[in-house]
Image (cartoon, rainbow, N blue to C red; front, side, top):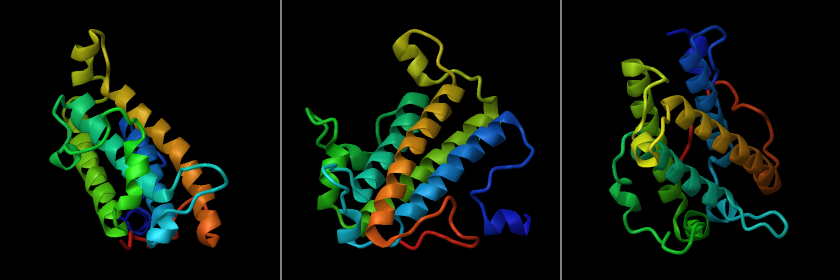
Length: 189
């Protein structure tokens, strides 16, 4: 493995296959989002901008749910992992945002990191096995073709939106700005 890869694992390939570029773009957003949310206490994770109720803690929990929903449910057709079983989504589509204030920073970081690890592992195995054109479990539910490519693109879109929001919130917390983590950075919590 090259030093470039280990020092900046979020850097997508400069020349690769479509799958390598797409998964690389998703991973870059994951790393950048995690860096924007990293190392904060409960107060920092609960910081809001203006009248918005959006917080970095809420985004950590939301993106963890999105990782599991996209890969475990939509792609593999399984139930959400047990940690989500007792959620409060019944009648509250923003449950993960509103309930994050009740979670410790350690819980939020651990939940997010575990969901990303699960999704990264499953997606890599799926792509290696049958590529991006393979049909996913959601296809059967919808009664039409749904490729793995669509699921990955949806995750890239989800992260693009929320990483931009995280950028603004983090700047308000302590002034952290930048596009990518500094070389050698790794999550602290």
